[in-house]
Length: 97
Image 1 (spheres, rainbow, N blue to C red):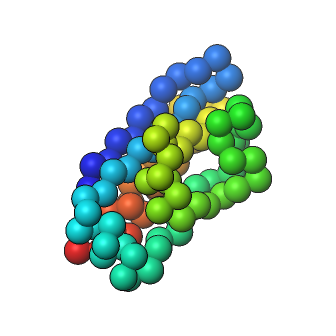
Image 2: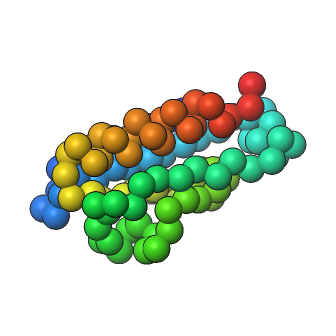
């Protein structure tokens, strides 16, 4: 699994960008085991047009299919770092070996 999680300051707050690339074997394993739902906190989240409004989760296969990845914007750096930790923990636990 190639995982990129970045926190970046923006004019509005802090952006969390998640990009995931799976190998062919990992994609097959995910399909056979059942897709994984990845969730994130919505408290302090700002809508900037890039994030899915009103969503607090997404299937891993959908995140993988987005070339730009998933981008979430939060009011503060603390919230962005908290979200990054939550996303990473879920992804590390959710990919079948």
